[in-house]
Image 1 (cartoon, rainbow, N blue to C red):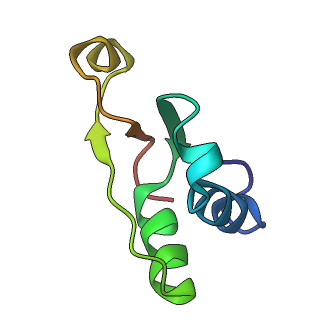
Image 2 (tube, rainbow, N blue to C red):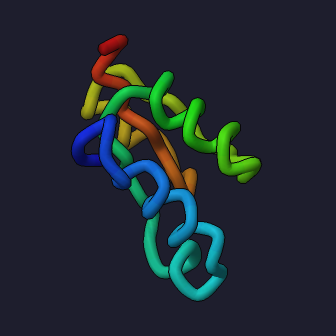
Length: 73
């Protein structure tokens, strides 16, 4: 998601609101879950995703959006 203090979380949230983008692929966001959730709350964008804790877990899902949390910053 890029620099957690930058615009990465906002760009991701706004882009994935678009059905034409969100349905193109299954996405994996890598970053700070806490920062991402804070950005979603601040922008009032409800956002659902599956949290994974190891990249190997990505094979276990057909979820359209997974989040690999790198932990707290």
